[in-house]
Image 1 (cartoon, rainbow, N blue to C red):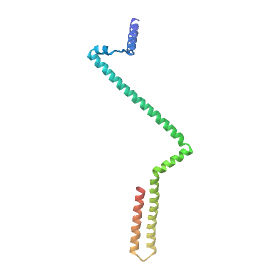
Image 2 (tube, one colour):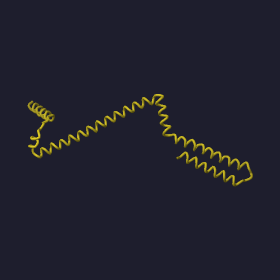
Image 3 (cartoon, helix red, strand yellow):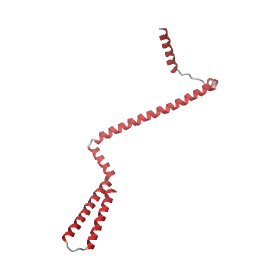
Image 4 (cartoon, one colour):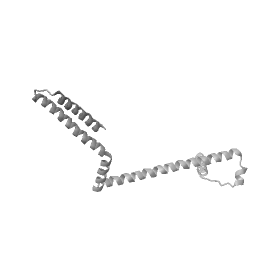
Length: 154
């Protein structure tokens, strides 16, 4: 029983003393030994760093809450017709060059395939061989194919 009371008394003293603060005047501070002054300055630095850490935590919480609010607002806006129109405009703004490349490249590829089909049919239908026309058609189809691939892949 006495041990319990002594234990409670010691824990209360430790708990109370951890929350106590002592204010010193400059004269009292100057009278302190050097090792105590070092410990106090170290504890002041630790307090400063602790404050910096708390500020960082508060900034992180503020940024996180701001991003959550922006996310909720953007989701809410994107579900409206105006929001969907804005999203379409943004997609077009960022991707219109890719769409144009694909469309133009596809058209050139179709022309290339058409030229190749034209060359093979003409070759079969005509018995006479006009080598220069055939060479121009082959070169034109190769150039068209290269242009279509360059347009699609750029």
